[in-house]
Image 1 (cartoon, rainbow, N blue to C red):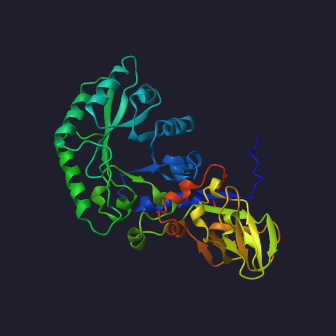
Image 2: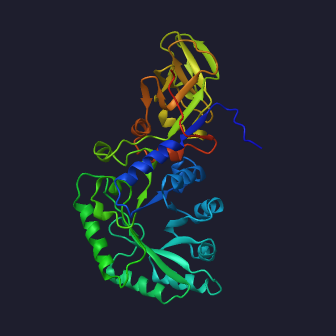
Image 3: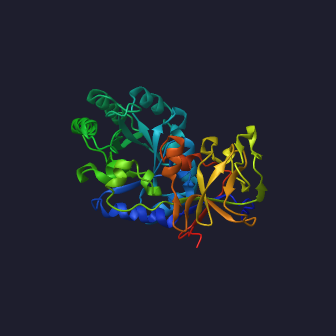
Length: 380
């Protein structure tokens, strides 16, 4: 049965934009370098299955996730591509990872020993990527000695194989390169002590893949935020090697229009008082959809014009000031473009004092994702 969407609040995902971003990345990579498409967190809120399919069609060869559940969900839809679990792998997941050919991250000898005991009857070796903590401070081995200990413990386990080694940069999206270079140097020292290089070495996240030297591409790069058309930082945005095309657009429509008189109150707490006679519109989107209350005052687009959200945002609805009376059903763009105006995720992020990564992730699953290759959002 085809799913029906009656509520006018929807997120439109332009899969062609995602593919264009990957194809442009591939043009600046060395020919042998693979693209790891990061589809964790439901593809940053864009929808993991649809995005993974688009990424693979565009030339990505590996899919990366953060949790065992995400890995199993992706494997259920894609039988053949490599799937890498970048986050910590609970030991209990090990037999499932081996059976489903999911590559997991390792950084501890005790974990290797515990995992080995769960693989005694497995006929498929568990593939591992060793994580090096070169300065991020989250997961990973922190010394060359610890790296060798993990490496040797895996080599002794017949039920496991080392498929890769990687690290993650903390400041690749910043202009100051001092700390970044320290991380690179430590990672290089770790690579130098390995008795044998694994099949895949990867270190570059989105920022490093876009603006750092090509010798850091190694065998693969991890393409995350900019696969979705968003720059990792303002600094990177200013020096991008190619333009990024955003893929996420959020729209709703008027469900009620009324005229207010001077002094009329709007919303919980009667926080907004009409300063004069004015028109007010109600939108069916609220904080249960990810339209957080701190977005009160944020502008939206109607008829190609910017108008503000007024009053407190409710769980399911919010109200906007209108320049005139509009018909019920008039389209309202919350993220995206109408006419000559654009409201970006960066604008929302500034309003919320956060980063653009957080914006698509916070739009809840109550908002359906509608997919298309060329989605036009102009009011004209």
